[in-house]
Length: 390
Ligand SMILES: *[C@@H]1O[C@H](CO)[C@@H](O)[C@H](O)[C@H]1NC(C)=O
Ligand SMILES: *[C@@H]1O[C@H](CO)[C@@H](O)[C@H](O)[C@H]1NC(C)=O
Ligand SMILES: *[C@@H]1O[C@H](CO)[C@@H](O)[C@H](O)[C@H]1NC(C)=O
Ligand SMILES: *[C@@H]1O[C@H](CO)[C@@H](O)[C@H](O)[C@H]1NC(C)=O
Ligand SMILES: *[C@@H]1O[C@H](CO)[C@@H](O)[C@H](O)[C@H]1NC(C)=O
Image 1: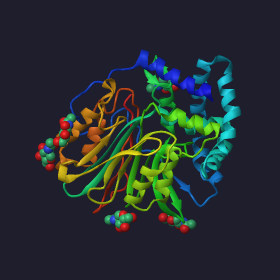
Image 2: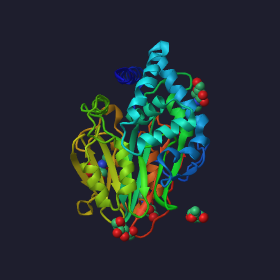
Image 3: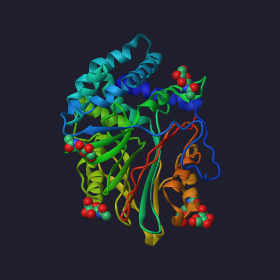
Image 4: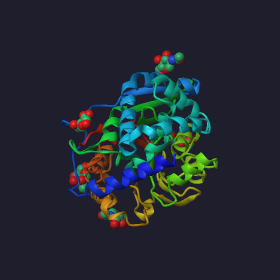
């Protein structure tokens, strides 16, 4: 396990120092919606996850469909690991040690992961690895905005697989390429009724992006910190297990919380394994916030406040009260474009323009998942699509 941590850190360091592409800013884009052009791959397919099934069976239909893509992605992770530690020792370690961890995961996640391994034929340890480590490599922007009629919009893009092996020939992140075909829309049902919906990667049981229809929307962004993910994960492995995995918490909140306020309290107060930003939207005016989390507690909650002229909240991967890393300032351009759009003109369409403007959608990002209008007056169906910007 220690090797995994070192490997990923080494990968990050190597790539960041040699391949990092400095961000650049362009004018705010307009008329990007609906997405089209040569790189648009069309809508993402929907799958139902039936929560009334036993956990080990819930993902069977999806994984049966996406087996080849999942195996290809796992193979790319293996290749990457073998490039760092030739001999295959690293993956051996994963195959031996991580299956021991699966029974320590809270219910129902361990059982679901076992079910995914069984259906896909991917070794259990490697499915666990995918579920616990990949969120370390996402970079995102999330926005909740309220228009002048009280409608709320929640958008996000997700740049994933960053730093996971740079393909020199076609200038892309190898893992990112392999993750793309795994993007799916999920409809989680109980008693044949939707409980919540999400856009996710097949094989991954936590949630990064979701909507509880008519109630709230939720996205999670990674928060880098010295007291970061690795410490909590290592503690978990060593037996100190009082924190919650972040994307398991988001899923549990989507499944069980019944109001914006309840979701907010659980996201702010549950002890976590790693720091995170939770971006939450509600179903009525003023309900939009960014919860900045340390592992132990909520450090700050920034809310929409129309009296202060704060009609949107926007989070990338830096604390909102601090300057972003100068190499990676996606916040200033996004705010500039939000300000330019103005509260009167914000909509699903114009928010998509903001999320499509570089460097918000930076050079290395391959897919942008855009989400949800949720308002007190009307709720349009979740509007999701993916944009391939390579
Ligand atoms: C990049 O290269 C890999 C093989 O190295 C290939 O599978 C993939 O399709 C290529 N991607 C693009 C966008 O050309
Ligand atoms: C579930 O709901 C769908 C429509 O929402 C309906 O077509 C289907 O028959 C229902 N299935 C069961 C088992 O009730
Ligand atoms: C908003 O959510 C609350 C809590 O679930 C619910 O009571 C209320 O009816 C919802 N409002 C709308 C307009 O859906
Ligand atoms: C956007 O508008 C807000 C509120 O007026 C202001 O505080 C902020 O500096 C503006 N940001 C940019 C980048 O224009
Ligand atoms: C806002 O929308 C109106 C029309 O609805 C348009 O005339 C105006 O130029 C737009 N403003 C901006 C800043 O896009």
